[in-house]
Image (tube, rainbow, N blue to C red; front, top):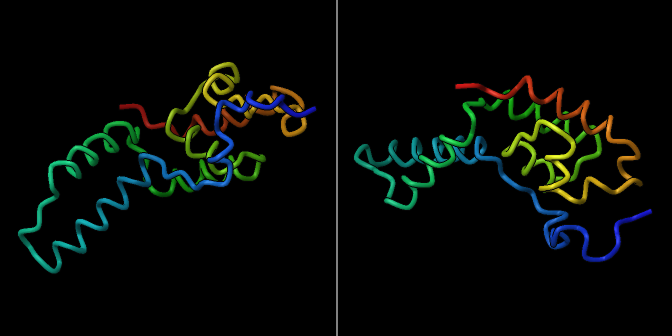
Amino acid sequence: MALPPGEDGGMDEFKEAYVLTNTEMSILLNLTTAKKREKNPHFELDNVMKKTKEYVDKFGQGRNEESMREIRRILLENGFKEFEIGIIANVMPESVEEATVILPSLKDPSRFPNEDHIQDVLSNIMRYRAFQ
């Protein structure tokens, strides 16, 4: 049984989107900045990019590229869609209830017939959460 129309949280248009996590965005900003500084040692990010960098560093939860890859792998192997992976990796919900509030698409019983599977996956990725 699929969710009735309109109960996907308005996420239909993002179902195939690749969502960058805060950690991945931070990595990309660091790489871009480093490349630009190779060409111009005095290069500085503009104010918008500085604020973006501060935000993604703050909410990236201190994860590194390896742990982020592992989180993506676990979620992908367990049937989560790209947009769900990005959101779960950014928010890191601890419970099925929390996850389904932000992602109603997880309530689809044809994808996740029981909540225990989702909870096991969430518990598994929690070990990659960096506490500061």
